[in-house]
Image (tube, rainbow, N blue to C red; front, top):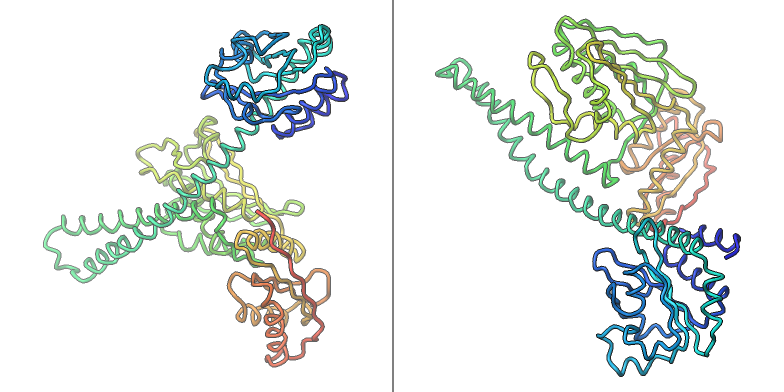
Length: 514
């Protein structure tokens, strides 16, 4: 086969398309009158026709040949070509399961060759070429044009396409399985969370109500134990629910421009009793804005902080640093704790993985905290990395893109478009003029946010001075009514929206096929 045709075949990643093109090319090269390519099913050890040209697929194409059955099965088992000049008389030609009636419906073949496709010692399929007229030159033509090197190369290409198809099928099965598991976790989590909360609340109220009336220290210890274990289990349930939402693509971030330094100070103040007596250092080179979900970024900081506290002895220190780096900002959490080995670092962000922790530093966690941190950071368009060595402490570095109106609009448009495709809705885009950037514009944003759904967004338009963009998920038929309502609000609203210019436009992004 010439190089051009082989390159054409190598370009096909889809197995069926590759085999169809191979059949056409083989007929052209060998001048055969019909060609079929059979693929070996590794589980059943049977050959089945994947594509045929010049032959009625029924009943032949529906049959499956066991390895060692029929000429094609012999070729597959012995991994060598077979030729026959009168296949109708060959007892090995058809499988024994084929009836005489089925044989008569097959057009008589006078020349047949079965060429096994073998790669790395494994048969992946068989090529069947045949003619209806007598031709002693057919065998020589096939041998001359289809060399062992060509067959080996074609076998490799088909094997790669088969692996890709199997991988895609396995991926589909895995997605369906994880979707089902995520839904099960969500349902079980909600069922478990309610009674756990009641148990925790009952234990707390009992402790507060009894006060000094508790008859023995053991009773108080038992109540405290119930409360602690309820807290711990609720935390685990919450983590599992978060992971199931992330896997299902249902974790919605409600992002706004925010100062990460302020968030760090809030988290540190709340966890001050836990940090003590360890020394705490805050090193902020600047206080830039990032675009994030305040609740979820608080969750990220809390996990990193409690992790640092857990691995740092009381005489140690914990440092928070904030540094701008080009178009991003780096947030570092450094401790002087026991450190993490290189081997453990490679698995640090796996779910349920727990590093070894000295008994004197406390108990292990659930192994879900850092996995959730990584997912939340990535959902914010950021990166997370760790640097550590045994006995030398650990530094977690989180990088987030700096906030700009253009970045915020691009991110929200991408996320909401994907959400619209999943939900079968449409993404509406409405632009309004507003006061220039400043307190009045922020008031305008806040006012509009109160009038839209929580899943919708009000953003600053980077393309126009003082412009706002409203992104809304809704039925396409209801978009004009939605736009008219916002315009009516702008006309009747108190300052600063009352004087808003009424130039506006809208667009609909159609649902994407899934």
